[in-house]
Length: 400
Ligand code: NDP
Ligand code: PMR
Image 1 (cartoon, rainbow, N blue to C red):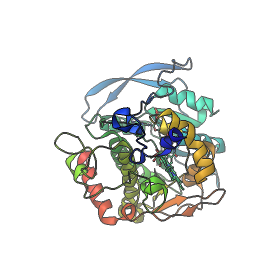
Image 2 (cartoon, rainbow, N blue to C red):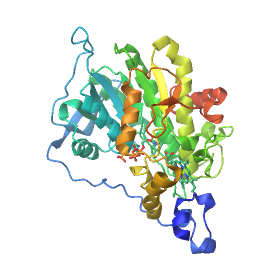
Image 3 (cartoon, protein in one colour):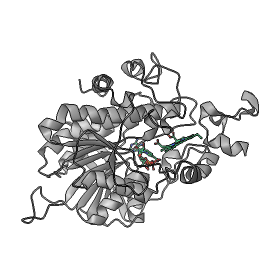
Image 4 (spheres, rainbow, N blue to C red):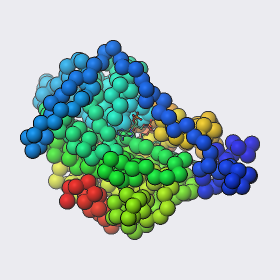
């Protein structure tokens, strides 16, 4: 029906069957932007403890923080046997649902990884870990809210204090606001999608790079999840609104929507475009990391398109009709659908497969195929833009 088609069309394709005032476009539709499990009850296995955390200036801040009652299982950064590799430590942001959770599960099942689930909602993460049957010795949940640079710094401090080595970092968390009419902002005043998906991860990975350098693990990796929808050399990337960073004037201005645009290219706010732009930043950042650090550090920098995981929480803010039809559309029309479990195995491969050590690569899969190196769009592989985005991002997050 017309409604069904409208739900799958992007806002700029919307079918104005009732005209503007009739509210037929997706942007005008009501939506249920409610997180499925924002309100989980406290689990009996958990309790809240007050942690005393000294800041770098050695003043003491008291912070309420939820922690697991089980002690972390720390393995020293040494090889345990002659040929036995010690357990790797991998940080996965946004491991409380979707791709991040499926990846955590897949890695936990191998018994070769300890997963730091870096999540903004501790109880949700704990329930999620339990729901997929991860056993306690294989994971630790640590609080991270990527929409606050303070929280990112706090997370890094907490992680360093744990004295665990860092072998792999997976920047996976993301928000997508396709129906938002107005921008929302991070604690630091950046438009939320780019602020969370790009700037939060940018600061996180910059601050953790030294830890990865110091790790003695044979294959250290920094993975930043990308997407087909940020790549305009694909059909999916040509569904409007298309990603486009323009001359990055909005980013330069700080994306605050006050004296500057909330969009990287300086244009009017569009939540779907902001998400796609953030994915371009993710893919550019991965390549800039590669150019700056691969040779000296030996760290593998990679990105990937895990497939269309049409059932995840990423679409939580989309209209209900879209969420209902999207999986079927992807399964039978584009055939790009992939289950959370399968996508998790793909990302787990990028984390730990001994054959995926090539740096600077954007990995993709075809149905049932092995991974292959994919071509990024012109913009997503533009080295000048990557440097520009890097330098501006450094200023915005307070690194330069
Ligand atoms: P989900 O919404 O299921 O997972 C996103 C995760 O990010 C959640 O755990 C969420 O936490 C977390 N998150 C959001 N905001 C913050 C924040 N401020 N601080 C910390 N964590 C945060 O979506 P997906 O699993 O689909 O998305 C994972 C990645 O995959 C993203 O990078 C996305 O761009 C990418 N991707 C997804 C595709 C798909 O088809 N689904 C296709 C291509 C790429 P919480 O649970 O608390 O909400
Ligand atoms: Mg898309 C081969 C075709 C293909 C693929 C692999 C995707 C993936 N999509 C494709 C085609 C189309 N999509 C077509 C032809 C349309 C118009 C009917 C279409 C529409 C569409 C919408 C409205 N698609 C979407 C949306 C979203 O809101 C999703 C999005 O852009 O999120 C940013 C989305 C997606 N399509 C994909 C993938 C992987 C997504 C979402 C996830 C992401 O990139 O992170």
